[in-house]
Length: 463
Image 1 (cartoon, one colour):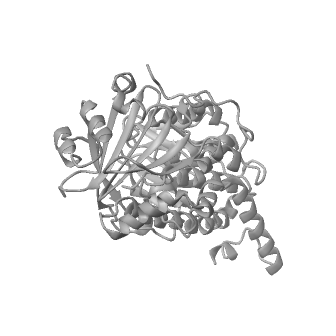
Image 2 (cartoon, one colour; image 1 turned 45 degrees about the vertical axis):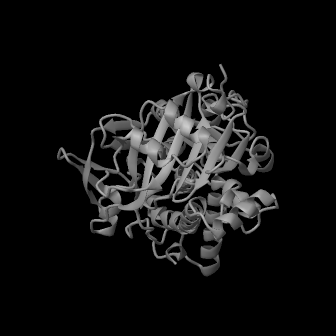
Image 3 (cartoon, one colour; image 1 turned 120 degrees about the vertical axis):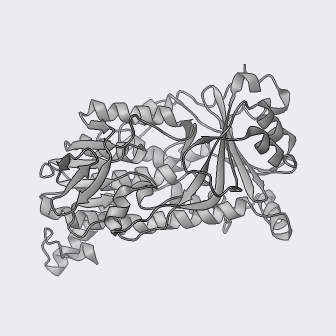
């Protein structure tokens, strides 16, 4: 039976460490942090704080740990964060290292561009690109949180936030207070609406996501698609108004399809999809993709939510901040949604380690907001532009796009972010912890030069 091989048992990575918080000493003056939401972002933030000796409680509205989607890409910038958290070796044993990212024509499956990522990503950025099961990633983060003594409370729905205390009121009536409250409750964030002071639900993006998982043992018995398994690659088909991403995981082949939303009543929640209808919509696509859909037994679908970027992630009183999808929704086309959340988690937890008193929280949080907003905004722009690029309608622009991709030049100026070496380096080469250190150091120097008190909430962090 053919299976994705690559380096599925990746050895210890250079730079792997189990310590967080080189920005300063453990934040002993921050006694307790409440985190609302036990997704990837919330768990990563909790681990960063927990390793610094801060007491953390996570409040999760669901009755159990849940993660939407079968597979997730972990690009080098996210791998670096997981290494700083001391988790990358563990995650790598459950992951596959793709050799290439292959862009394909939807009509005949021909290769438009092949980008090597193994060993190029490791050689260029010090960390690999991995693909893994979301459930495995979430489980590893959850287990690490428990090992650190972090309390994860399920079935706890936050109804109100008192920014003055600060404290949260749960649906059951209980009130819980802390030195700091962090909202990591996703695109449908209660915390975001509390900060804004009004309802701000996500809007339909106009895109529908289908997920199909195919047993690799079954796939390997069909020669027409067996070559998609080995060597391990990330395959991306570019088509009019739709695109398809697929790659092998441990035991299953993960297929994710983006196409126009044809029914405005579809929920953001995962639902069972109409597999026959999905097959019919791809009848003009290349035979291998049609074969993959033929081998599928079921499909799940959901409407892709979209929320507007907000500039202020921090409450003026300085005891509350947002992270992850609660601040920004990133279209999943350059595999940076979870990566941005991981980066923000490490930046914030590293900054908080430098707190000498709770009075410094407002300055620290505003530094976090100031350094993260421009990067996440740029990634959001890149994601939306890349979606249009991948799903370009047939015509002269599409022909020129395909010609440029096939040309195999250096790729400067390409809209697809990972083809442009400058943009790829900006994305994948980012070191969140080093960025936190530099940003806080710059803030301290600025305040010293102006004769401002670091503990003064009116200091330059609010500029």
